Length: 168
Image (cartoon, rainbow, N blue to C red; front, side):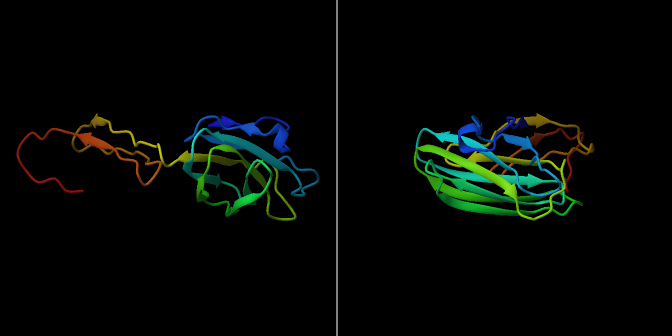
């Protein structure tokens, strides 16, 4: 993942997310255990797009992510509740006209545990073309892979020593 810029506490100092389909890894910097820090991220769309804003945490903190237009008007909000035992993820689909937009992340709780990482990013749903690649595998060997979106596909090919049924 990409890393947030230090001091991205205002729209003017927002960390740019220049490539869709990449996550930025970050943490809120908090004083005295209070959830008072804010992190800003900036995206620029050169054409009208449908995007999916995503946020993930592995920690137990709760977060708010506001999607803002260039004037600071909220267009949508993600409320993410961390649970500490497994990843928590939420997303928000938006149709946006060409322009600059901001993601504002803050703690959604009065007391915040520092050093818990979150990630934020977006998918370009209009132009995202799932990779179509074929991977050769050995029949009978277990493989593990991850699909990034509901549109993502993986194709595997293998050879059988003799005719027969394949189940899985």
